[in-house]
Length: 215
Image (cartoon, rainbow, N blue to C red; front, side, top):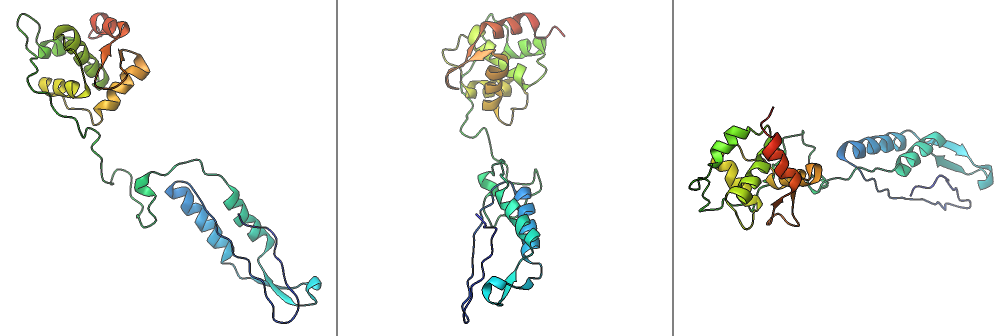
């Protein structure tokens, strides 16, 4: 923490130097702005004054408003957390969308031997065309419904849902796990304690059976 007072010593060639270190936390933009302000305040020419308390010895002091400005910057809280990708001091500032993209579906694999065209039952592709889900959330919900109620799957995982996307020829969401979490969090159409055992809820069943595809 920076200190607001400057002390001059008297007697002979004695001198006193106070060095402080500051820690600034925030995102790239806020940290850069803080550093610019501190550098601007500290790099201004010093003012030579005579301290009467120091027996007429000359002291080198910053302008008081410069010290105040630097201290205010250090005291200001930064609530924005930086991601590990941007916290490395040597990392250059990247334009949004140009960084290395992480595969959010890493670890998921297509489930083999899933029969989406069971005998004497409606194929998944046909139900998909009939219901016409409007977005990835509705599509994922429909696939869980089909896997549970038409195919009678014992356990439904994110990999099962991804395989269903592949079956109907629809682009797989960039983060299929989060898509499924959103169904539970915002709609409560599915329920699970982990993403390896997803179940439909009554609200989800009702939406698929009575509202989806009605326009």
